[in-house]
Structure formats: C-alpha cells, structure tokens
Image (cartoon, rainbow, N blue to C red; front, top):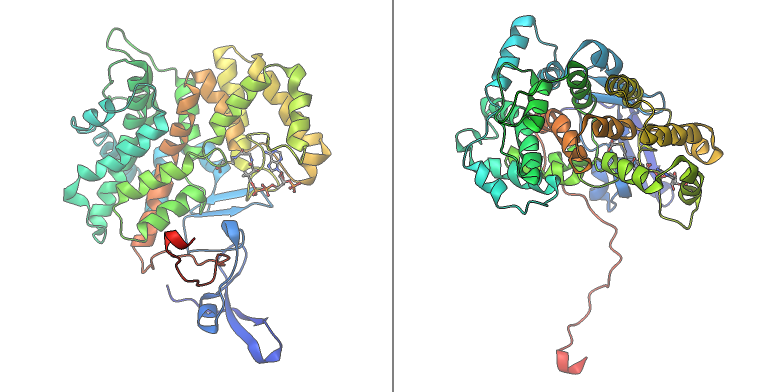
Amino acid sequence: MVQKATKMARLSVDGEDSVFELPVYSGTEGQDVINVGSLTSKGYFTYDPGFVSTAACDSEITYIDGDKGILLHRGYPIEQLAEQSNYLELCYLLLNEELPSSAQQAEFVDTIKHHTMVHEQLVHFFRGFRRDAHPMAIMCGVTGALSAFYHDSLDIDNAEHRRITAHRLIAKMPTLAAMSYKYATGQPFIFPRNDLDYAENFLHMMFATPCEDYKVNPVIAKAMDKIFLLHADHEQNASTSTVRLAGSTGANPFACIAAGIAALWGPSHGGANEAVLTMLDEIGDVKNIDKFVAKAKDPDDDFRLMGFGHRVYKNYDPRAKVMQQTCHEVLAELGVEDSPTLKMAQRLEQIALEDEYFVKRRLYPNVDFYSGIILKAIGIPVEMFTVMFATGRTPGWIAHWNEMIGAPYKIGRPRQLYKGHSARDYVPVGKR
Ligand code: CMC
C-alpha cells in the first residue's frame, strides 16, 4: 500500500551527523506510526520485544482504543453489534467490509449452513487421538488436516478460492469443535441440522444424542451466539499475528488457522477462560479469596488472577461489559444465580475494582472472566472453553489472512539483538 507521510520524525543516534528522517503515517483512528523500515540500511534495527510499540501491518478490519475501552469492527461499536446484530452477520461484515443487504445475508447464512458437514475421512483423524486428548490439541490437528481435503480451492492468489475457504472454515469449525467433545465423551458424532441457526446447531451437535430429542434453550443459544460474536476479532493479537505471519510465507489457509489455534491455546491468550475456572476451583470458597489476591499481588509469586488485565484495554474491556450482562441472563435462566462460583467471581471483581494494586495497574476483568462462567453454566466442559474462543475467532483470523493476501505483502521476518558468542574456532572433541 502506498503511504503518504503526514509528518517526519527525526532520530539522532550519535550526534548531528547521524540524524535519520523517518516518515510518519496517520490512520483514520489511533496512534500515528513511524516507518522505521529504512533503518536497516543505516545499520540499525528497532528493538521491541513483545511488539508493544510495533504496528506490523495496515488493516481496515478492527480498531481498538484501549484507554477509552472502544472496540469497532469495520467502524461499528461492539456494543451495538452485540445488541442488534448476530454472529453470522458480523462474520459477513468482517469478511466483506459492509453489512449485508437482506438478500446478501440470506445467501450467506444459506452458504454457511450448506458447508457445515465434514468429509467422512476426517472422522479417522479424530479416531487417531487418545480419548483424553485436550480438545485444543485435536482442533490444531484436524483444522490443519482440512488442507488435505480441499485441493480444489487452495490457490491463495484466487479471490474466489479464498472466499470458499473462508466459508468452509466458518461453517465447519463448530462441527469440529462439537466432534472433539463427543470424541472425548465416547458418544457418537452428531450431524449438523440445516433447520437450526449457527449457535443452535452448535449446541445441538454438542448435547444431542441419537436416543432422544434435544431441544435447544433459546436463552442459551442467544448467549452462545453472543460469546462467538464477542470473540470474532480483536485486531493484531497473538493468534491473529500468528495467522498473518504463517500466511506471509504463502502457506495454505487451513494450516495458517491451525497455527492461530495453537497460539490461542496459551493461558495468557485464549486459554485464559479455562484458566479462570481452574483458578476458581482452586480458590474453592469465598473465604479463601484474600489469600489468592495476596499471592497475585506478591512480586515474588508468579500467580496471576486469571481473567484480569489486558495488553491493550487499560480502562475496561467493552466485551466484558456485554458478557457480564449475558452472564446474569444465563444464570437467571438456569436458576444458578447464587452458585458458589459466581459468588467467588463477583467478590474477585469487586476486589479488582477497589484494591489499589489492581486499580493502579489498571487490571480490569476481561472478556474471558465472564465467558468461562457462562460456558460452565451452559454445561460446556472447561477443556472446551478455548475451543469456543477459537470457533468464535475464526472469521477474524480468516478476514485478516484474506486482507493480507489480497494486497501486496512481504514475508514476516523479525530481526534480533544478538547476544551469543562472537565467531570462534571449533575445537575437536578430544581437545576440549
Ligand atoms: N494478576 C495480577 N497481576 C497482574 C495481572 C493479573 N492478572 N496482570 C498483570 N499484572 C501485573 C503484572 O505483574 C505487572 O505488575 P508490575 O508492574 O508490578 O510488574 C503489571 O500488572 C503489568 O503486567 P504485564 O504483564 O506487564 O502486562 P501485559 O500487558 O504484558 O499482560 C496480560 C497482559 C493479559 C497477559 C496479563 O494481564 C495477564 O497475564 N492476565 C491474566 C491472563 C488473562 O486473563 N489473559 C486473557 C487476556 S483477554 C483474552 C485475549 O484477548 O486473549
């Protein structure tokens, strides 16, 4: 993309002789960026472990203002989308830049519905896993394995192939997710049903058995749709950046999404919703909370309160606000509003909002704090929580991959500050 500098930055390294002029670019929103690409020809790299100040790409998909707690998808605030839209409409928006007309929406929903089944051969991949395999391990494997099934549409330079792949991934992810659960329980896989919507279908594939009718609770289906919607995209987070980095080599999209799933798995990212419940189980009772809060505040203790803090949101996480409300709706519907887990969660939240340690570091409950509680109440096992996140995040990953592949791009190749040995002579083993 051709960039126009809005101003110039001047960098002086060692006195007046080495002043470098670096162009500054402005986006439609957010911080300006300094193009440091020319520094390598001047003998320098930039140094930014964790990419805390590095913009690695242009993007038109999602904007976050972490200080103000703003999250926009294609310009639309997440609160409005959560209130008035639904997950599949957001998928369309992320992939296509604009909200669909009613005809486009109907066509999109129909297309997704008609891609939900997976190839019967894929069932053998599931059978190769141990029954106690973590479902995220299964998801990494079977999503990558999809590359072996769609040779007809793997030309990444063909926009129509990319479109079909996006539809396949969004449609099949809930099927794969439910299959990974059914496999662990030893129950038969349940086929998708075309008379159900996206979230209903997922719940049906998770909880129905061939023995009796399963009726999807509309409150739960709405909450599930909201969980998918709130996770749909979050700009250049670790997993999305992983998808982009893998994609920058020209790797096929299924392999790239499998890489994103692997990156999401960690407890600092998508694994946090699972970690929240594990932590609440470990705390066990409201009376133990102070002890765990003290551990979280102790600089000599690695323990962190899972579900609190965010690299970008330093005010509040707007997704957490919506999720909190959904959490209350679901718990009321299921009649478990006074569960010990919720009581512990509420107490932790109260502490985080009042305690100086958390207030000073601006550590607020994030989206994963509430999503874990809702998922548990719905009956989704804890090991499946990150799979839910991965399912919801799929349109974001694929939209970013598509955005990158659809424009000129370079292979991602960070540099380093080398601190190892300088060149030295090899010594044969007998002389060491
Ligand atoms: N509990 C206790 N202390 C914390 C926590 C926490 N959850 N998070 C950060 N801190 C402290 C940290 O020890 C540090 O203190 P100090 O300045 O005294 O050294 C300070 O706050 C800044 O932390 P940081 O690690 O430099 O912040 P970061 O931006 O690198 O990390 C984070 C962000 C999300 C990885 C971190 O807050 C964390 O580990 N949270 C718990 C895991 C979690 O809930 N992750 C889900 C994120 S939301 C889902 C997603 O988008 O992936």
